[in-house]
Image (cartoon, rainbow, N blue to C red):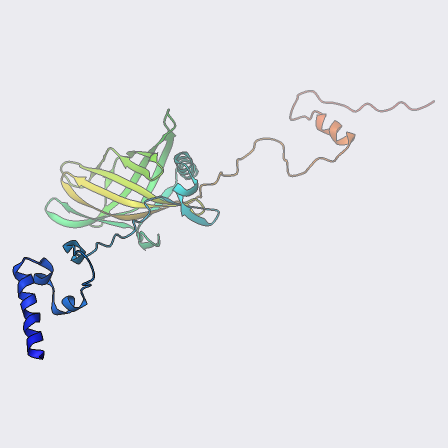
Length: 288
């Protein structure tokens, strides 16, 4: 009896295989016994692996203000980002901006400089940038870009490169597209010829409280010294992005005037510093 059942079972398998059933041909014994025979039709596509679609990370710029950080696209505009950066650079005009190789997630410095592999002549070496000097901050006529004059401090092999100022431009094309780039500046790094250096800095992190700017950089050298590198860089500015206290030229406002008519008359009374006419008090006449 058992032998007859096995013969029928094997015969069914052979018939299904010869009839071109893709499932029988490709399935294992475990798949065969776990197959839902109550299903009216079988689709071969069901055996294919399902692709797992991972959630895309937000490409929004992270802005920190009032000691709170959040993606800019949630509550800020392109104009706000640009105005904040303009205030930040203007507050640090004529100051040194420290640069460092940083971690893109924690926004902390890994080294106190950025390293760029280059070849000077025929000698491979590394170039280092540890700070940038801001020489001037100018707003263009349209008011949608910031023109910066930057001086990069580049060292290599124990020497300091003599570089011309970099005419850079900072613009916010949209909320998630803020770029600092230049058209190239020249550096004297060999006895013959000059090397041209170009920089692109894509900003994705702005800390208005402590004056930090982070982003991906790409710096290339072309000429007698060639090479370059890319990575994540953090700019550390001396002052924050909030308006500085202006130096008011005028009367000391620390002492508030007393209330009453006497204070009003004293405020209107001219002093020697304001006029060349000296005012004498009129004394009351004595009664006879």
